[in-house]
Image 1 (tube, rainbow, N blue to C red):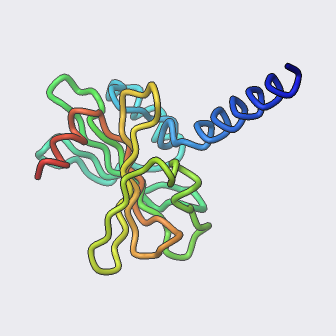
Image 2 (cartoon, rainbow, N blue to C red):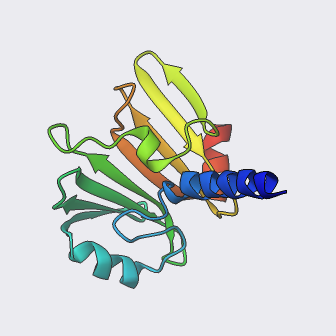
Length: 153
């Protein structure tokens, strides 16, 4: 009985650890967050560069891993998606650092790798894209309905 309990405990810890590595936010910003809150968080780590007509913002970010962020809002000024853009010469961010590679959908087109994963019990999807097989270039958190619309395209 003790052996079975130990095995179950180890399996639970492995599952919890795996999920613990999932990206839950980008610079503290999550899908569905209000614009004012996003501005407060991103202003602490960067500078708003421009606002675009399609309810998107481009931010320059001061971070050893990422150089910028793109935030898309819905009609109610809530985050539809947030994308972090990695520094070419920065600290590498591996796909495995932000999502579960075993559970993610992986597609390639030429040298481009595209991973998509919806963490268990989450209301968002993580998308990681890059031309390096280990290191991502773009990390996106998107509302589930937006991720499904992108998948249909």
